[in-house]
Image (cartoon, rainbow, N blue to C red):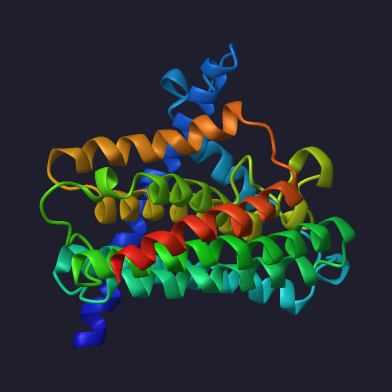
Length: 293
């Protein structure tokens, strides 16, 4: 009975977030169009509101003959792993509103650390050098930014005295931890493979990167789960850094931040990003951790 309760809750959360994802993709395409002085989708439905659903139908009805697919069981296993991790993110979302998130921040850190394995499996099993390059760059960069995420999570736990999501009391931690908050924004961009740190995809130089050989339902899973993780991370960032009315403003800001970064920022060179992570970010976070201790 207990497992059934959680299964239904996770499924409902997954469906709710996926409905938001459909309109989030549409809103992103429209906002990027206006930022770059061009029109977004406006043909399917009123003002293009049905464009995301039309794209979904187009992707689902496509198919490949199995014996001619250039991807192995490892690549498909990476896709299934990403879907499972998305469900675990939804479990975190459900537990928060259900009042059972005592170790929610640590749970987020655990699920985040497994995301790199799914991308690595997808790229390595695709029999394509561009997919291999994208997955390797993503896995190497994950070692860098996940160290920053771990330091920030430990720091928040030390300040709040708890790893419960939404345990911010008094003024928002954004005011107290301004430099770590900026580092957090950089880290979540890399975690979600978004510009300017989309080393797994790199559409301009790797012809789509790790998901080059995917189409139909499998590509839909990779694409939709990426946006699901973006929403969950935006919500999670608001919960651990802000409270009261600032929570709502920060949620809108974090969602817009992902769109703005993709539409305006050029890709950062890989070695610059790694040097910034280990020579600047880690030192700043180590200083804050010493103050917290």
